[in-house]
Length: 87
Figure (tube, rainbow, N blue to C red):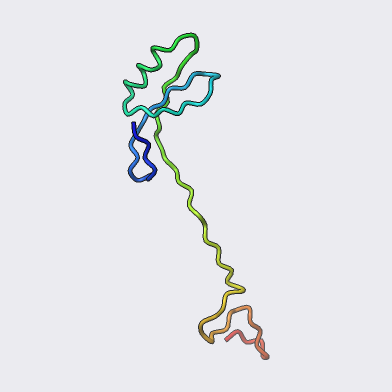
């Protein structure tokens, strides 16, 4: 099965994991193929895992409003005028 890099193009897949063994890396395109792999291995309990969700973490943009340059003459609510009236 081809590994897809774009999360929106991913399809369900199955992996075989031997309990107490190293992590599984091969992605089977069908549950039946994963079961066949598990059946031919001996001496360890193998489980078939189905991938049900994909999660992608995206970069967060932080913008400090206190130090950002202002593009107009409006005062911010933190500005203090001489008469303490906020407008």
